Image (cartoon, rainbow, N blue to C red; front, side, top):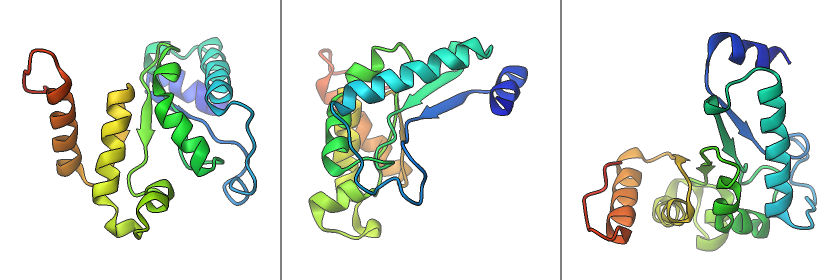
Length: 160
């Protein structure tokens, strides 16, 4: 409630990120029946609560919380289900840069996960992510520009 009051009073933007559990224990056997549906429903509930607290819905961004209380398979399903989350009508933020899921696929340490992060970023954007959290800004921007530019029907340069 105090954060909602601050956001409402200042007109600040807010990111509602999904996470189950506490940071110290969230990775201990996370269980979901249908991770995309459950995360969507929980984010929808939090969005509704924010609006009831007086936060302008246009100030809200939703984040499925890749890596926060989720297994590799949960993260993969969420990444592929971004369009389902976007149906909530708010921008979707995805943060997977250098994350464990990239290491799971590449076998590389966090500092060596640029190529994998760019591939994951491309998937996220092509699946409908509106915002991305990255470590390598210039390379990530190029990856998004190429992915979007190559998939646009008219071949225009991406304006990202």
